[in-house]
Amino acid sequence: MAYAVTRRTAEIGLRIALGAAPASIEWMVLREGLLLIALGVAIGLPLSLAAGRIGASLLYGIKPNDPLSFGLTIAMLLAIGVLAAFLPARRAAAVEPNQALRHE
Image (cartoon, rainbow, N blue to C red):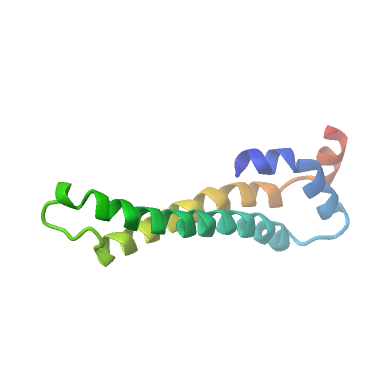
């Protein structure tokens, strides 16, 4: 996310120069991060359910499809992903339009 925000500095600076609110810039970056998180969960959840069936003989003390484990894992990934998107979003909202437009 930080790399994507850095590459889009000129675009973000232009948006701010044209009157975009910092909150809308933050939401734009957060929305992209949330989309990536949702895509990762949508792909990873079925794959991990299938892998749980394959590796069921290696597990001891839990079921291969334990809902608590899956729920906590998804919650942890969501929290880390939101934090990973929020920090660059705050930096993007603080971009000075003059510096961003002169950069390129």
